[in-house]
Image (tube, rainbow, N blue to C red; front, side, top):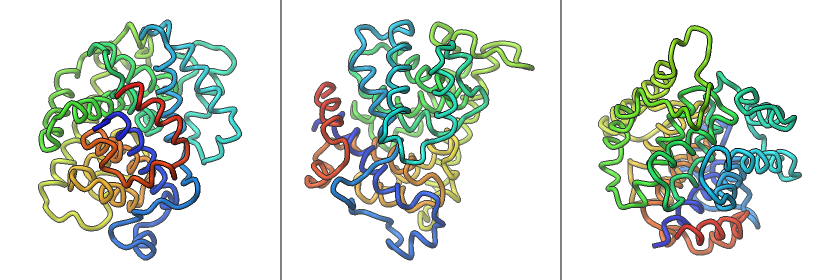
Length: 329
């Protein structure tokens, strides 16, 4: 099945298909590709965006470290992010939050002072898929890493919670959770974790004006994510899934909406992975991030054989994707 490889390649495939449709209106996308959206990779190689590039940075950091602790992981993640920022291949319209935060990290300041504390852009959960695929982590480690890799750039509590939920969706689907049970499992996670502040990973990130406790800080993130998951449930129950998915669950520029809309387009037809990617790319919002997360979910559940075989040699960074997937499969 090779689910880790399937998930990583699914992320890259969705990213590539969504790359040309990002910033386009839904009607324009449909006029060119039809209501199913783009479903064929284009180019030799088929290029991806910063979503895949940063997911590779997180994954390769996790593959490199000798222990999964904040003290060991932080300098490696910092270096990997700086290498990405300085790379000549960082020319894919990267998010300003990431660039600002990494610019701050570059001067050596503590990450809690480098992060963008009020940002909950989707730039953190678009790259978290590897955290859900690494084998052998405890629950505390996986949740801590998912939030920590987000917190280095996006310090808003909703960014932290959405990144953890994204990682756990990948983890559970890979482990065989039925897609029909995924939404309920994620809602339960929101309820269980609502007051859990992972201070060993996050330190004093919670300290903000008008915030009285770390529990109050983190609860806001879980509550906003829970509300987004409720919108997914409502959209699925409505029955008619035609049209722009962003109108139902959000445009995806912010963390909880990227997760919600990716879940929505995936859960409509989880056994049709290429259709999932096309549906995610045919969206008026952050199309590449929506499609890449949806592809990560589909690939985690179905494995690498779910995708067209010829895509494996066409997609950009195939060698790095294979290296991570092989290590974790």
